[in-house]
Length: 224
Image (tube, rainbow, N blue to C red):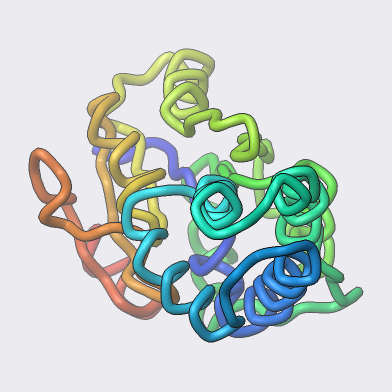
């Protein structure tokens, strides 16, 4: 029986791939190219889409700079990473279709937790722009630049609520992040397939418990 729900933010509640990622990646690539990267923007983007199947964006930029750049390129990696993880965020952002209805329904039945990866400043700005802070009992921000994992947060949630891991439902779009981590700790994993592909189901030791493509599917599929 589900007793609590952990929701991802990027490409689960917010269409980050469509609204924020294009400019953030372009700014990061242009900064690397300006500082000696021997690739075009199109080549960078093609490689990025392949590499994020198995690594974080931080590692993608480091790989590009190491293999196709100079010492100057490497010296500008920190600023490149900052440009990507600290994009310009509008004061108002739209929730994905159906997300508001789900949050309104679910927060009346379950403790909800926002578990998002990135930097604290950027992720809090996104939550504020979406107007979702009050929907969650707690917001957890996992520092992906330092390669922290969501599984520690999932364990913290179940320990604080004194519930077994299999009573926590984890919903998100990243196979390599929240879905993998949920399965590792014994939680219920719902793969929300949306946005840029962040790993494939075949990379997991076992498939997620649920697989959806739209917010309209969440409540009936997970029997919430």
